[in-house]
Length: 260
Image 1 (cartoon, rainbow, N blue to C red):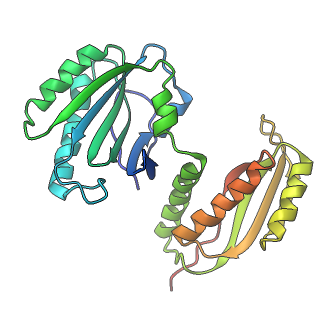
Image 2 (cartoon, rainbow, N blue to C red):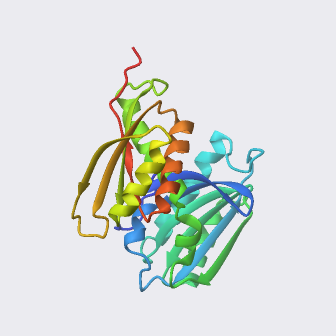
Image 3 (cartoon, helix red, strand yellow):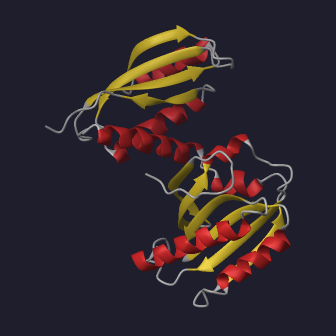
């Protein structure tokens, strides 16, 4: 479902999603697992490697298959060249005809020279290397990390992938269950009143202790299909409604509906 970039021995959860950056469509590939580590004390510099793609499409996102293989090879060569320099690849963004690779490094100037050596064997490409201080990893959190809606889309894709593996027909309606947690019982009750007007019914209410402040659990369900555009629309709606009550939307599930 998503690409994977092998880097030094760190947790990895590579996810891909579409976004907009500076009013341009963007294809973002990033390591979601770094959120539990960042910022890393000895990696206080951000190295931004930018390469001009040669065959980007009209949206500035995708290239011909042949060039895509070359760009992936360059990524791997950069990782190999810097693997002994305590470097972490945080993400890669393709947008506006550019491929931007974001690396957190200890010694930016040393890594800059290594990247130049890699690009010496790719003279057909124009590129730029910029090193800047980013001790708080602001670029990771503010640019690469998905918004709550993009994150929900990623999670939706994960569930849909599993349903597809089970032979599901996304267009068939079925009971879709949603799970939401609230910090207050009053907020949960107000949320229920709102979603009941949208056709949801309460499947379960209970009090839980998961070691956080979200003690009031709710399971609701509604008859829906799970076409990607529609599942995104109604999960985003529930995320938005839950925000009004400080709630945490915790995902959805359903029984597969076989296409036969």
